[in-house]
Image 1 (cartoon, rainbow, N blue to C red):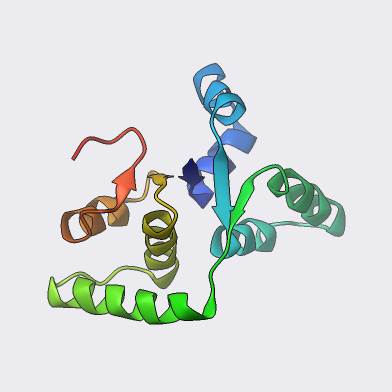
Image 2 (image 1 turned 90 degrees about the vertical axis):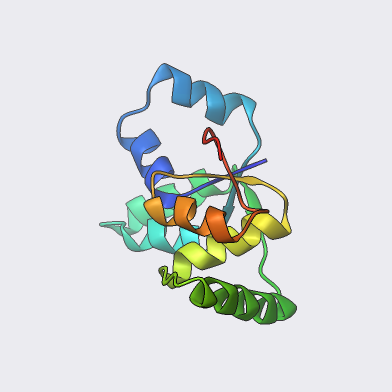
Length: 128
């Protein structure tokens, strides 16, 4: 399963290429609440909001439970001790990817930085 970050989904919707379209067609693509919120907040109309919401329903949805807030907090401590300060939403995405054992597909540099400290974080298409 691949957890596609917001930037990957936006790029795919704005300018789909055949190789990326093939990945979306053949792989199990996942999303989560933070990615969903980022995409929906970018809508310019109710119609576009509904279209985005419908498109996202095709992806596997990864949930974040109450106990995950404790795990995320511990992950932040690990990152902080290593001198890393990353955006909250990126840390949440990384946490869920580790929890569900999936790869994060992203163009965001923060994930490579986190991967050094979080060895269980896998990135799609990126070698360690």
